[in-house]
Length: 272
Ligand SMILES: [Zn+2]
Image (cartoon, rainbow, N blue to C red; front, side):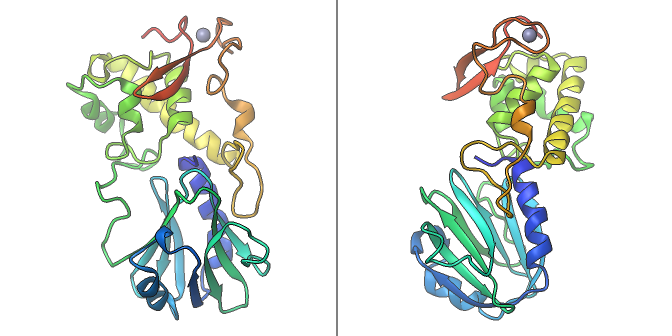
């Protein structure tokens, strides 16, 4: 599932190819992946011009001249492909096609169809429950993070995954940040010391920034808007590496389950 660095990479690619283009026609091939219903979705988009492409948490946001936005959540297997060849005939999992004024197309393809494309009115937010702070924004300070943890008995890893608190962190970067900070993932968030909280705050920002610089982590499905794989999968310290030696202390990395999610960590050097 693409997390903040992967979505940011996709957004940067889309911004280069989509901004300034007009949507001449929207064709919905699988109605249940769009909101509102396919007819209203298609009608509203015809004639709209793309003014910007941005990101909020794990959502891609395509900003339109009218002030409306299209939010896209890629979930497991969703992809956004731009080009002249992006058509139902060449993309077997095409679910939505936006035809653009220059004869190119934006295709939303999704094999498992968990992804969603949603038309948002002005001021409407992409997630119904609201989204928390952007971890790479200036608002995400050591102090704001500290108060987020205060008094919380939730395992710190579960808190990091809660999109209503910090938006964009998923399983990969939660595991990696906790390893960097030397913190046990199941530790109650509110029980962490001030220095541990600061270390974790810094680790979150560092790991996300490094992953963006390498264009994200490529698992089986993720490629960016240009079909290019990321490079951060070669830099992962613990995620997906159970049975391998910890890069810091050489004890074997373990996989445990916290709140139904696989969690990779080092029992030896993540004791805080
Ligand atoms: Zn270790």
